Length: 238
Image 1: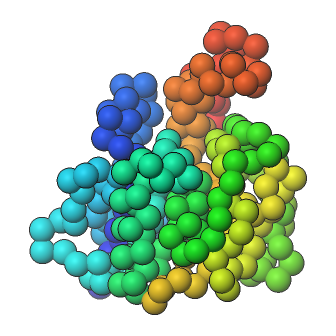
Image 2: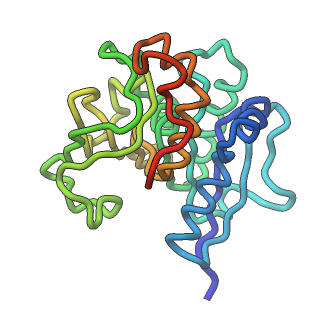
């Protein structure tokens, strides 16, 4: 029996993907592909780099040929609509939804999907959420949602973001929240599909989070998360 076919939508521009590898991190599409295959060995994944001007589906593929889509995070801001890579991703998200392909995504993904579907994203007035996010609480009515199977009602998760969803698209439902952001997970209908996303990074393992923190060390020291470069971890214990 053939497993599900999933389109991985990588939100990082090419120059950033190359720098991620140079800094010891994993390209986001590869990280998600590995995560999905760990969960289900027979899953088939294809990748599109939606931020790139020359992005395209693999030859002979069509959006409606996929059973689902998974969006990665990104370093670009969904609010920067002057950035052509952001506009391309909004347009691509709408095309995916119109094709009836339901999806899941983390961090930037929930933001780009929200904007594409008519919601709003803002700069978090409480500042950046970095490292391990604490006190994520499932909303009462949605503890039985499939993405939270086996999850405690209150949990922690890997985080690194400074923007957040402020208003969900029509029909949107909040699935999880914490003190830093009122929408840490949500689901909403859009086009002929349904998108479910989280603001945190379930695809990160400890070493990957450490690599990301090290990569952004200048910002984290400047904003006071660490006193100096020597205290920023380049890896985290598992």
